[in-house]
Image (tube, rainbow, N blue to C red; front, side):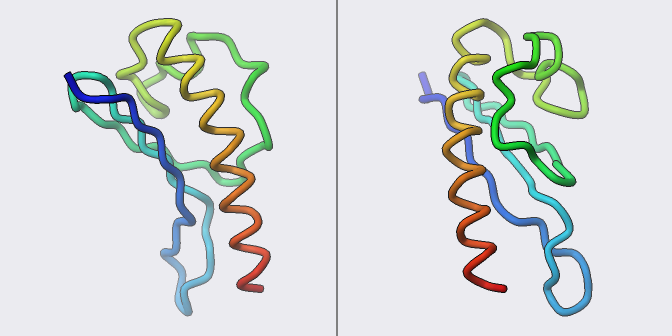
Length: 90
């Protein structure tokens, strides 16, 4: 069984490499992954219900409470890192 994995990175699709939001990828325990684009991610998504992450434009492979809590915890950490990295490039 694969381990859960969540990652986030700046999405650069504008000329000159300008950041146009952020991408996230969630890989579930079966190795299936989904990508999601965030225009301006908040510092935390702890306030959202379990149905939010399961939407097809987010991460529909979120299957249970364990996945939900894992993503919320990793999201906080990843957003902080990508925001700091982005500020360093400006």
